[in-house]
Image (tube, rainbow, N blue to C red; front, top):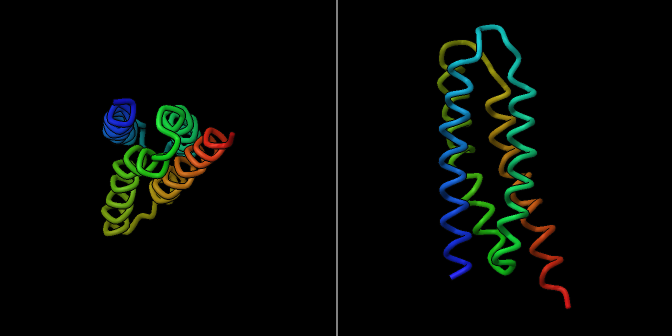
Length: 117
């Protein structure tokens, strides 16, 4: 039951974060640097992934991927859409890849340590 709860929470948080990031990108005034917001999301993923991995340590990789894949997909699509207009907002791409990396790192750190006797 704890594993299913961790999966459901990871997916719900991942989807909610994707909606939040899209809202943040749309509501930010033109010309504003989104690097701080992107870094905050990446650090948040590491923390949330670690907390959720604590519920089901053997399944940390699935939890981390369920958490980060919605934002990663959104970031890559947004980067591609904006790049097709001739602009390159690297924050979208770095936030997407950073979310995956931070989520996996946070889940790995807790999952590995929780299994040790």
